[in-house]
Image 1 (cartoon, rainbow over the protein chains, first blue to last red):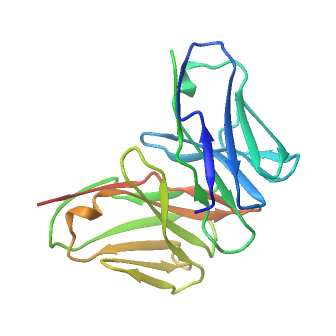
Image 2 (cartoon, rainbow over the protein chains, first blue to last red):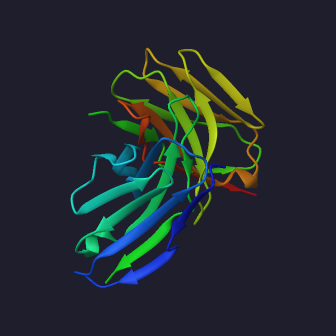
Length: 112
Length: 111
């Protein structure tokens, strides 16, 4: 277990409001990832980070931004939430070795 | 763009039966992972397959990788109810240890 904490675990908000999800890890893993999980789509990568202040886009990055100011923290921001961003969001960490990514417990986000 | 397809998407099977879940991917990769997810929970790593011909077994589950065919299988032997979950395969994609996930196979084992 990579010691990953996601917050909040649940959030309900309104269309057009900004939302920030937080991911905190205690294992000093280099890579961090944000995924969204939707029925019929599996997990899709939103953004990832390969070091402090080093981030890049994933498969479904439109409408999302990220920041990583410290090794242990990776923030996902929805600048102006839309109903299509209602989903379960997972944070994961990884290393350059062959070890699998470790996942947090997820954040269930509902946008009304 | 790497595509990862799993089939079946849903599998209902009786306890004691055997079955196989298939994971096909579209471009070359030599690292594949299997995960399990229980409803409302996080993803748990099951297997890491690192080379062509790799086979890993844990209890009633056995995973294999054929990189030439771009195919991985997850075989279930004598299924039990506790194996009911959604199973995902994921393929290493490019740099930064990124993964591309399949859509998942929801397994329901009935008594």
